[in-house]
Figure 1 (cartoon, rainbow, N blue to C red):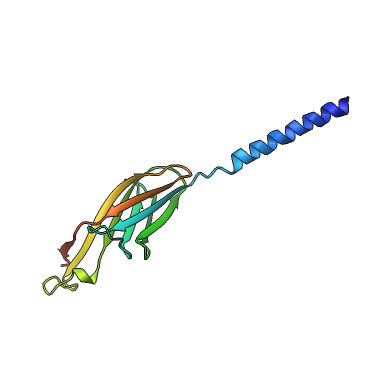
Figure 2 (cartoon, rainbow, N blue to C red; figure 1 turned 30 degrees about the vertical axis):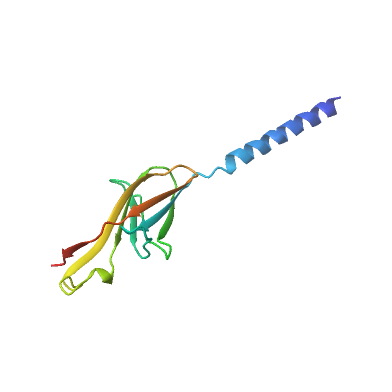
Length: 135
């Protein structure tokens, strides 16, 4: 009888440990972000510079969009992030606005709240374009 009770108790103990291990170890606490950059016509932009950060914090990521106009990254904890994108292209320059004296680019921004263990998608739409004097 004692052997039977001991066997049942061991079975419950092993089951409980297995369930606890399954629940506690497999939890994904990272936050994933997929940023797509588009121009004012709604077309994706490859080669755009993307910066993701929190106001007044050293937590940030920077990168460049791929051929699909996307930049993917992850953070270890949830937070509200600012996304800023800029794009400079030779097509913005003219006889008046030359790359030697002017810096012509498009920019756009968005804000996103990342959630633990989830993939969050965000889109940044660039404005039509700005030219600034380099001097």
